[in-house]
Length: 440
Ligand SMILES: Nc1nc2c(ncn2[C@@H]2O[C@H](COP(=O)(O)OP(=O)(O)OP(=O)(O)O)[C@@H](O)[C@H]2O)c(=O)[nH]1
Image (cartoon, rainbow, N blue to C red; front, top):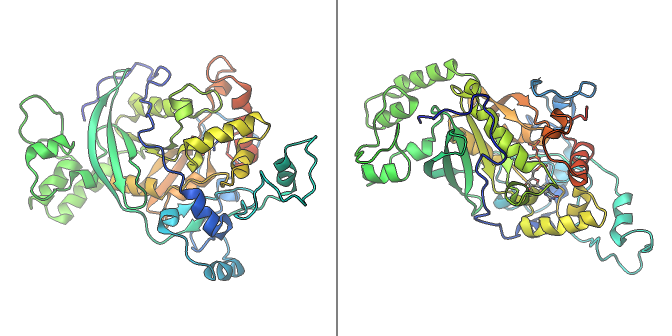
């Protein structure tokens, strides 16, 4: 890609990165699956699995955050839990739609949401003091948090980049929007790619019977489109061009691999953000969360001149409302206005506190050539994301975690989101979801 210049300091105006309207708001099928199988059924079954909140990704507890701070990562294993494994084996296997991602993150960092307990409508015999609190709040206080563990699966989902297009942005920075289909859900997940070195293997692959025009229309071209262009296959020496020429028999596998390896060695690990859809925070200016700000910040960092050679990718997963969908998230908002925090509100709606998974992100990163030893630098505060995105066999290596510090914290409140809601949202993320953020 030929990227046009970004602003000198790489700054982007609020929501300069494209906000994505909810092209597809998922039908709320996941809760039924969870009702059937229960969140606690998700057990660890692999030796390489890491406990996100164990020491591996422990947050620095004393030093205040600093955007320049990065944290080297190491790996550790959890001991196998044979009784849990035996228990899990006696149950029917969860459906692939739920578990095919490599790691289902610890969906409920507290106790499992019972499939059979309706917290909003407790049994008439259960004691409750409705004058003091909502009926469900007593139940929540009785819960003893226990650490759920991610499930490690053998295989990653299959993904296919069906189209990409150049998006000039309001800052002058260009990026390429890649649209993916997959074999585990009906959603169109996206990869927002910055820089010219990152190519999708599935997009570049030859489709039977297609013409050069077909290839250009679906974005499988090298270089730049211009009126009258007739071939998708210009450009020399890049791994994409090599990929195309390899398919034409001009390179053997070893030579192509050598070109790719040389390119990889010359680049530092690209920045990656795994971002979950948030219509409210990204499109309708909600100050309940910092999602829109995080999307903008990720795009800003990937647009910096220093990131130009390595490039960057925002994997935009359609996991609205931490996987519960927009409709349920709006109910959660109302419960929050009634006094619950974001964690409790999900449980009260009989969802896991966090229903997301990241196997699709791993598969998309692999398709974009970001697997292997080169590694990625992952922008997140979420310890579960760090471990989950690496995949069952560490197909993607997170070399570095780059914290996402709220703008208001970094600027002493001069910029960024200011609201009681966002403060509560952030403190719940730290206290209950164990995000690696320390208030300075
Ligand atoms: N259920 C629910 N989801 C929310 C709420 N506010 C934001 N979200 C969703 O939360 C997701 C973003 O997750 P966060 O927990 O903020 O952050 P994260 O992605 O886990 O971690 P970082 O990588 O550090 O940003 C998006 O899918 C939002 O739609 C809320 O009040 N309730």
